[in-house]
Image (cartoon, rainbow, N blue to C red; front, top):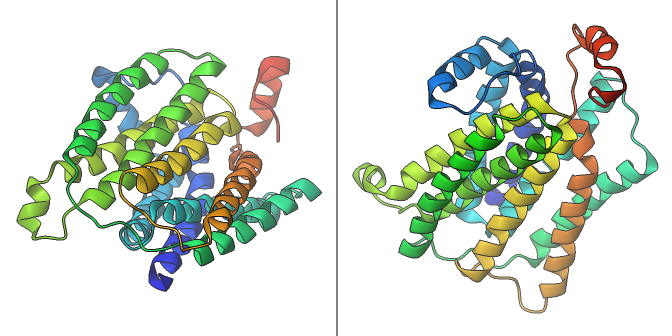
Length: 297
């Protein structure tokens, strides 16, 4: 339990830093990009040319390594709530590096996330057994296809609503990563390569990453990140309890629910601190955007 929780919090630190860098790098790529197989390679190449985006990618990969450990050792509701703490890291970095000030409500959200995680850690029982679940594996594959199709449609629009849809789909993709990680066999490399969940994990992560980058281009990061955080936190938690037998300590059900709710609400309040402008383009953006442009921080 201690190792898993430490891994989750370590991943949260890396994801929190990466969020700032990913937003900066993504917004330097032209917004005409869309999730089209004919243009996807060019979009990815353009992203990889951005040093900030490359740094975000490295941090995300390192964070995923720690997150994977947490997913294997903790109930999904605790592992995913731990990752939501990345928003606390982003908020505190914003106050130090970008002269942002936390309001009383936002400081309360920071405290709420910390208290919620504490309650979850105390309430958590054992993680359900990692075992094959053919129905869930099929659901992951179907879900990937649906997310890809809907993402392709949403990415063709520059409307603000597309930002929220792409963020929501990215959240479902990251939820697929968490669920796939729990379904992996503890076997040989050959068994892993033969397992469909190995590929649903990789594809879910890659698809979610691209969809979130597309969402960041099209509107406020708050609008992109709120549905992503909500879906990637809640979906695996529900699947873990209802399908994968994640347990809560006897007599601590209310504590677990309260901790999860506190963490989720606090994280959603702190979402606005994912909003980052590139300092080099801020003045040009504010001049060109006008009253209909991006909401200034």
